[in-house]
Length: 102
Image 1 (cartoon, rainbow, N blue to C red):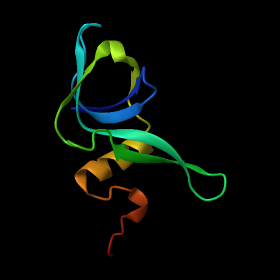
Image 2: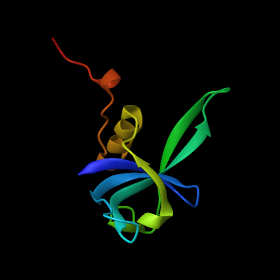
Image 3: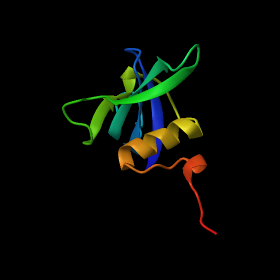
Image 4: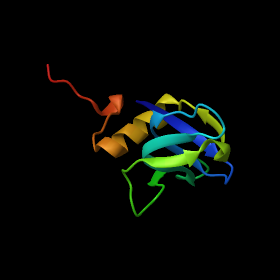
């Protein structure tokens, strides 16, 4: 399964684990553990990315998104995917926080 970031016609930008990509415009994207990407200001003029559950009522089930509602789909930048994987797995995957004894 691959992680994709989708830009929707509504303006939402979402990220999720993709189980099915559409074969044509009548098909569906099938994603699980979908999060919405939000740009937020963090200290001064710096911007950061915040991930929030896209559907608060059901955060982990598969979601079917009609392909006609998707403007574009990309493999997210590595730091965005790392943040996503950390959030959905509950593990801190950042290399800067890994310490080895020895």
